[in-house]
Length: 213
Image 1 (cartoon, rainbow, N blue to C red):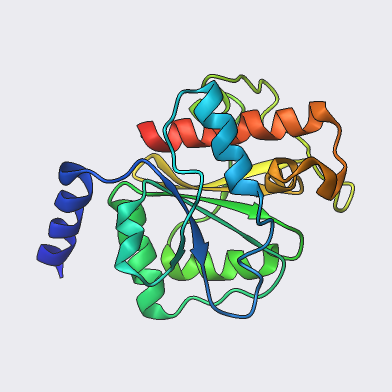
Image 2 (cartoon, rainbow, N blue to C red):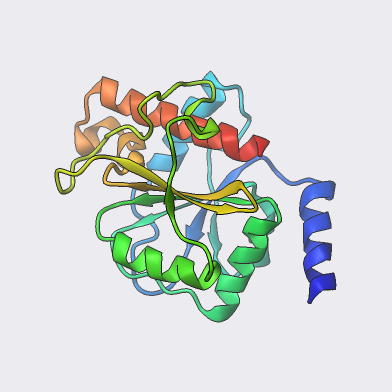
């Protein structure tokens, strides 16, 4: 097993992979396909403002697929149930500890499911609130107060939680804000331009951080 994992790490870090973002497809019945315009709009903004060259046609990748290792960053959202099999949890864990990054956007209703499933991926790790001093809030765009508030759910403050593996942030979970609502086409949620801009800037920071770390 150690030899297999070492081979994965070498392939992931040394050979190179497309600098693209993929949408994580999961089982359990939840709508992993929610916010269909979000990632495309974020990529367009990032390509313009932080000079990335990401494909504007993001691919959906199943959590148990080896194709995860083709992408430095995965995006995940939805409203309902999520289920990771043992093999899927292991595959996602190997991806993350080999240099990958996962951004989870709580699209309201995701919280109680995602926390349970992430425990399958990292049984000994807990989500920790990410301080505003962390690099992810201080890339090209600065967020001195941490995670910005984009979409209202339960009158709670926006928070950014993370899973840290060997001191590296490998999972970012935006909670009570739904960044990806702010990335969607303007007419879908009727968010003001200033709110959409905050969401897109924070999303660009996430991409920038994920590609560099």
